Length: 270
Image (cartoon, rainbow, N blue to C red; front, side, top):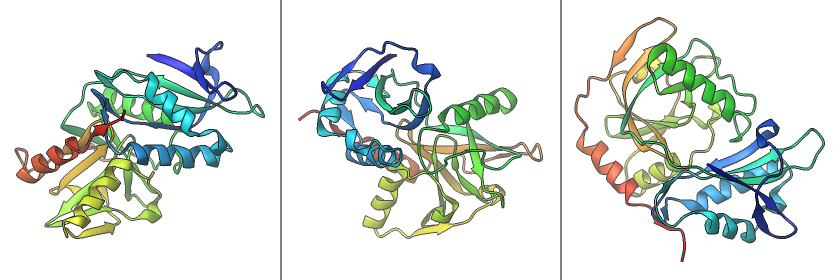
C-alpha cells in the first residue's frame, strides 16, 4: 500500500513525514477500480465532499485534489483506493490523504454474524471514524463464527446495515431496504441498485426488519468492492443458531443484477 498527504498550497500529493497510524481518521471514502474503470465515481466524490464538509474541510475538496487522485491511480490492475481526512492531534487542522491499496479478493456470497449487542459506532452517519472499530468486529466474527460480515442492529434489534455493506432484500417482487430512520450510512452501490429498480418499475419498499425475518428471503449485502453478494447463512451469536439460505444455487435475478452492476463501470480518465 502507498500513502500520500495532500499539500493544499502546492496542490499535490507528497510522501508523509510522520506515522499516520497515530492520527485520527475523521472522514473517508473508497471505491473499486479495475483497469481504468470505476463505478459511480461522481457519487463517491459527492459523499466524501459531504463528509469532509462535516469536519470543516469541504473547501479543500477541489477539482485539483480529485485530478491528483486520478493521476496517482494506475491505469491497469485492480485497486481499492481510499481518501481520508486525518486529524494529527486535537485542535490541529486536519489534512487529507490518499491510500492506494491493492484490491482484496472479491466474493459472490457470504456468511453473516448477528451480534449480541447493538450498533457500537460513535458516528454512524459519516464514513471514517468507526472504520477501525468495524474492522475489529469483522475480525472477531471470523474468528468466533467463521463469518466474513456482521450486521449492525438498532437498540430495538432491527437490522441497520452490515459493518462494511448495505442491506437489500427481496420480498416476492419488491426490493426492500431498511427505513432511513435507522440511520444507515448512505451507500453508493445500494443507491445505484435502488435507482435502477425504480427505472425498471420494480416496487421499492423501506421497512424495519429483524434478523430472523430475513431468513428465507433473497438477501443481498452490497458495497463498492464486491458489488452484490448474497447471504448464504446467518449465524446468530445471541442464540447460537445457524440459518442457511434455502434458496440453493444462484438465481437468475442475482446473476443478471450482478452482471448489470459489473457493467456499470466507466473510464476514470477521459
